[in-house]
Length: 344
Length: 280
Image: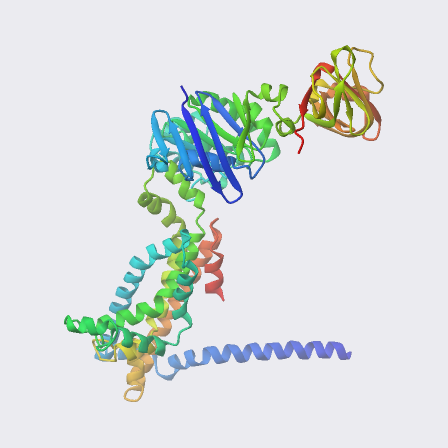
């Protein structure tokens, strides 16, 4: 049974939400661009935003039901919330912040390794430390659901990568359903069991991160997951494959079946890079100049013409590619997903 | 010496001269109060029954007026700061009006409203309640002219409290009253304090509305500023002594206000409106 069930319509300014969503004992991430209404959705669950109509249940409790006139105030919903800017009380110490909602502050301070900061004011802490305090405080009342609003957005890039791993551990250990919203698909991959893609006020697709990458429902989902998108016209090719003539004139072969205008989605890690075409079974080869090379960790993303390929850092060093050099990106016909474009 | 250097020096000299004139003009009257008679005489004259009565009336009226302003003004300011409702802009403007209103207008207005034949005063009179020429009238006059100073600051102080902190408190199970007490009030406290000090300062010096609405009865409605005016012809030394007392009180108030603002500025909470208001 769902731990949280949301069925609502809500219009605020440019945001018009209409969606139905069930969340079980899992970590669920709502991903979407800014202005999609992600935070509004989270705030509606917390009781900080009142839907125009619908019904929200948390556990057994109906916390909102427009038909029956139920609107439980935030204090009585049993939610723990981490706000986007954390919203720590600046005039209270770390210990006072964590103890504010009641519960065993000492145990939480130990669990989040912030006991030594107990008497510090939040203003004196680093971004990562503040994040831990906010999490500890949100869990202090043993909530029935943990809500995280852009939990990593306030951090600088370096702390962010570190906290992403740490947050994943805490979220897994929290033993409550977690609903988080983020604009960054990578955050969702690191933290969530399932992801819902929110755009235009509705959930475009719900699935595990790998499902969304492997089979994006549409071009929007594909672009959000960081997958390459090319546009062209599909028609039947030989050997049962589909031939897509891209808008720039190049040709791509796909094992998917589609006709007419399509987006072609190719995951960056499905693309191999060489200085010359390789002789393996890959059906597709695109030749273009290298636009950029960005290293992160032991991997690198290398932009070749319209494509971004993800290969090991060692491979980039071995190839000795630099921006401006010609390179060949190759990928199999089975690595391509064809997403038909609805005629306008 | 070349001509442009001479002109530069002349300009510099002119600005210095102007600054000295300003400084002398503003401080000379204050200095004169203390130099005209010996400090011993000034302190001694405060034992005069007129002075003692005026001090008691002033303190009583101001403490009561400021208590009313705090108790009623604080929730009102919180509402205006945190809710968006129809007529909010109008409410803010009306709140500021007494700041620029001539005190004589405030006085005649209070009489028209609460005087024996006034809009509300007539009803009160029939019920056996007389307001004019009583201590209640002093309290009302003081509250009328001084409350906008507090309300302005209080609205600014409440507006500066991050709404996310209030929401965080709510999700942590706190009632609205507890949220107000534990989160909103401590974060707005310095701004509220600065506003209360300004309001008190204005109230202590209130003259025009009080003399019209409450009169100048020794021991009943005669506050310090009214006593100064009443003693001007009869006992100039006593008037001077009362003046000296008010100079010291005003100086102390200004100091407290400055301290409150500098503390406020050093915390993370922004009270820029409060700061500019006092430091200008």
